[in-house]
Image (cartoon, rainbow, N blue to C red; front, side, top):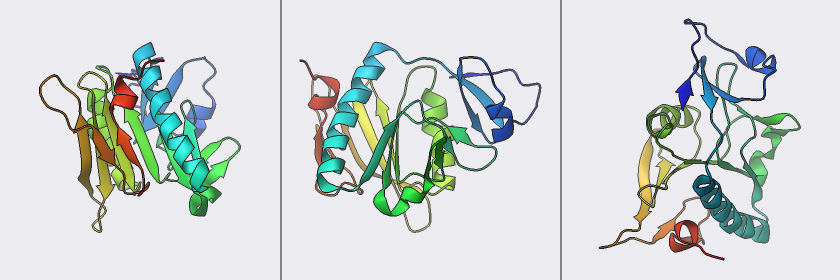
Amino acid sequence: MNKTVTENKKFTYQDYLKMTDEQRYEITEGDLYMVPAPNTEHQSISRNIELIICNYVYEKKLGEVYHAPIDVVMGESNIVQPDILFITTENSGIIQKKGIFGSPDLVIEIISPSSKIRDTYIKKELYELFKIKEYWIVDPANKSIEIFQLNAENKYNLFSNGYIDDHESIKIIKSTIFTELEIDLEKIFNRSF
């Protein structure tokens, strides 16, 4: 993800609202980032994950699932657009017409070469700071998913991870939020219609 040259200016939500071009942006701790459009592989993986989660969430009546682009405003200097997010019915008060104002219960980021460091470190720390209960990092290049759970000390621990490769694989992942759902990575990375 390319950081926009800002000459050390710290951006706020009010600055974000004044942007008039058609680019997608995020602000993390006041730093402005331009978000490039995702490629087709990213979009396919995102769709596959969202279909699996939506079917489960709506069948169980657990809450709402959203996908990018949607603004998640977590304070005046932190505005992000996660690839997929989930909000429980109990937490639905954060859903407003203009976006999400507060911390979702689960956030999923699908990394690319340009976003890997930002999603793996910067956004992970941000999501931990704002106490998002579960964070998934999806890596298309390695066909892997890591699921981090917020522990009692408000730090992320690796809860579940899976990957697919030619020699050995861990193909099933589990979530702390979707307790009865087991996700087969083949349906995410190798789905064919």
